[in-house]
Length: 478
Image (cartoon, rainbow, N blue to C red; front, side, top):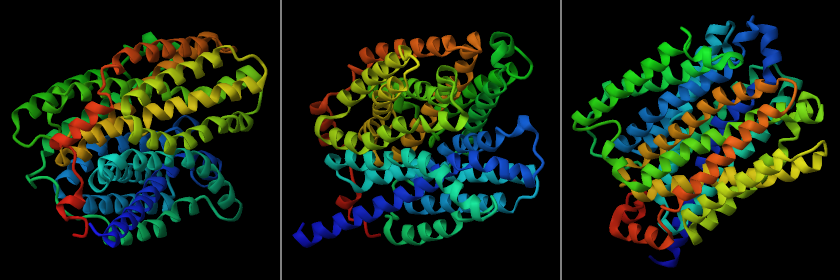
């Protein structure tokens, strides 16, 4: 390549990275922007107090069930087409939400939004694998990983400003011009080459996988934390857990028999992918603790709800700062050392939280290693490994699977941790028990992570030919 060609490629890479960043940010903000809007929504739509949680839950649920669908389509029909389709579906959901006059239409809109957003992140991660050479993927993934930290901060801020001047509907209407801009530049910038073989998609396989995830997620959401054991075996929970097991068995049988499966089960013959799967589920389980930290601070420091939420800022900021740093470290040192360091830092952070007294400074200090550690586990390293271990035709699928594994851990965590918290409803004993369990899990995982490939072996894997990026196939401008 000449100097001018190299400069042109780098410029286009940068533009695509910005495009992917904004797309992911749009989807991520629509989770954090809802909480401040709920009081305003209640003024115009009659909602039962017990049903309020579904405004967020249904978004996450449909996001979860749509991941494998869009990821598979992306591998078969090209990144650009499916990225644009995902954005358009998300925009359609935003219209439903913004125009809703009833709770049913509101939930329908949130479901469509969640379904559309499920294609944005795995496709974006796959695009990075396609257009960036191996030695630069870590930095690119690290930059994309900062999105969720920004979304956590920006969502409530945007909601707070807009709600002063507009009705709550505006929070979702602003997605429309953003979506149109994204569609326009996606069509201009993203590669349109079809990565896979273009065979027919396995609809029955997708349906059974969707029913597996939906049954599992819905079943756990019905658990009564105050009567955890009894609740698991209740009519509200156990049938859905059994359904999820049955559908999972049917899904595996189906995938073994069909020529073009939704998930190639042969991928799990890779030791690296098996290890990443276990780590991802445990990382999601650990990350779910963050949801309950504001209540922990209320119990420990006797602060207000708003103050408790603001006390998360050091954790969120450290996470946002860590992501690009981790990306650069990935390119230099490889994934294994980053993953192991993340487990150690998470354990240190939670250990400091265990010994936090009524001095708030101790809490803020403990938040920093925890924020860095959880980012090391949940952002770019695991996605980096997945990109390196599979061929281009499976990149979006494995990125989607990774998101599903993390989500499964989060769902389990949000079901189990509250049942521990109620052991000491007015104190912090339950939180401490949850932290000690998570510390034990993360320190144990260090020994598993030692079996990941070191940097030298990672680079050898790339040289063998499992890594690829579209510039080499001259498909970048198609």
